[in-house]
Structures are given as C-alpha cells and as structure tokens.
Image (cartoon, rainbow, N blue to C red; front, side, top):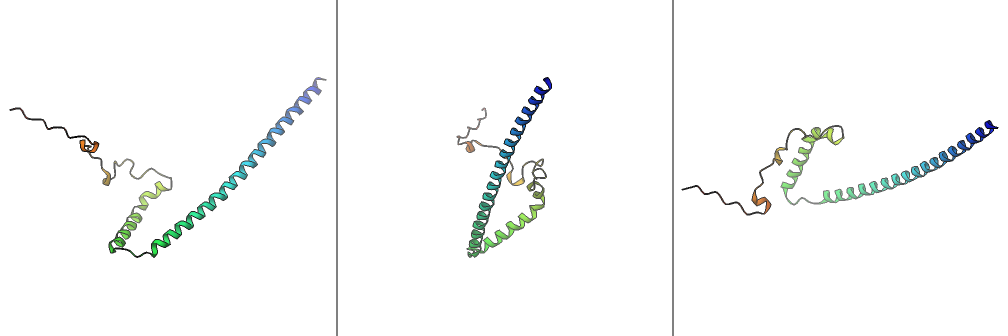
Length: 131
C-alpha cells in the first residue's frame, strides 16, 4: 500500500513537472516570436534609415560648393580621419581602452584655470602694497 501511494505521488510530481516544462516551452516560443518580429522591424527601420541617408548624401553631392576652401577643408578632414583611424580602430571595435586614456588631456583640449569671468563674477580687486 505504501509503495502504491509513493508511486502515485511520483506520478503526480511528474505530471506537475511536465506541465511546468510545457508552460516554459510556450513562453520561450512566445519570446522567440516576439524577438523575430522585433528583428524584422529593426531591419526595416535600418533599411529605411540607410535609404534616407543615401538620399541626403546624393543631394549633398549634387550641390555646388560655395567656396573652393570648402573642398580643401573636406579633403583635409578626411585625410586626418584616415590618419587617426589606426589609433582609434581598436577602441571603436570595443577591444581596447580609449586612445587618450593614460595620456592626460588631448593637446587641443588642455585644461586652463577658471577665472571669475568664466563664472560671471566680477574680478577681485588687486591687493594694494603698503606705503
């Protein structure tokens, strides 16, 4: 009799576990379907953004440059980007630290002492020498 009761308890537990597993499987299927839907939506959104960027780029290329210096500036900008790319590539790929870490501030952005003028304050009067 005791073995029969134990057997029924085991069967009942097994049934409960099977129900839990089925519920978990259904939830996973729902999550997968939602992820697939979000993935498709993201791809469509990305394709739309790329098309918009391409249109904007085409319009910008079709314009006449107002001044010859703009072409020089653009050329020098892209040359500097290509020159600094090897330094930044490791960081941009998420495989290394920021290129300026450990080197202090970049030379073009050095810190300077703040003055009263920077904070909208009136300057302090200069101390007078004793006579």
